[in-house]
Length: 357
Image (tube, rainbow, N blue to C red):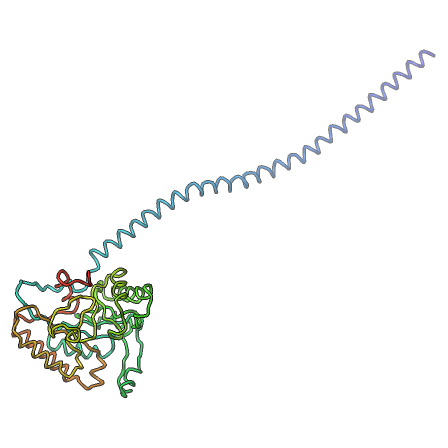
């Protein structure tokens, strides 16, 4: 009996060992499956981690290097630009009237200068006449915000609709129409300045000057007040002197009406009153009187006008006579000096103030 019990126990033990062995085999296979998933995860992880880390490293490099590059690149660019502007202003862009070659030797002279406003197509015929006699003492004042503008109302206001008032285009100006003559500011759009704000006045004058500099290659220094002497005020003068490089302002009122002599020099350059208008009935008479006058002190004959007036009043022959008279007088008398408005300013800027101190 005991023998059979021992056999039964041995068989039971053998059965138990067999079952445990099979369970151990099952537990071994499970980690293999899990290991298979773990292998897939590391395969993705190395792919994702570098993908995530590389942008981080790349962005960090940009943040560190970009500012350095920007500072290195932009700072020299700004400095170069500043130097370039300064160089151009000083050496490459001459000031109007500087290359006149006229020397004041201390002896009194009789200066003649002409001014014509608006930059209109009649100017071409006027320049032909002046070139015919070798006279180049005329300054033309233009509005660069009105390129090609047709002011038909000007002729109509004189009951002469046949007379044009057409400004040159920028392309025409750039072609060299005014070569050999002085071109200065007449404001951008020819407004009445008296009711303008300081900012508006600056904009009208400064932008016109900048455009002229770009087209003609020199810095204008003069302004012809648009609309006549009732259309600006003393504040305009102060604003222009403070915010622009303009240093003289040509007026329309005869100097005798301001208590000045017929042939006197300006008291202040910003209120530079002329001798007369070309269309004044006595303009030729005044010219001849000036030519005949004894030169005991510096004198100035300053005539102004518009090209369209020669069409309105049929005075082309009169203009021809005036220019011929000027040319002959200058050839015969060394005391007579022909100058543009800007040249006269350059000659006397150290003696005549721009405005009241």
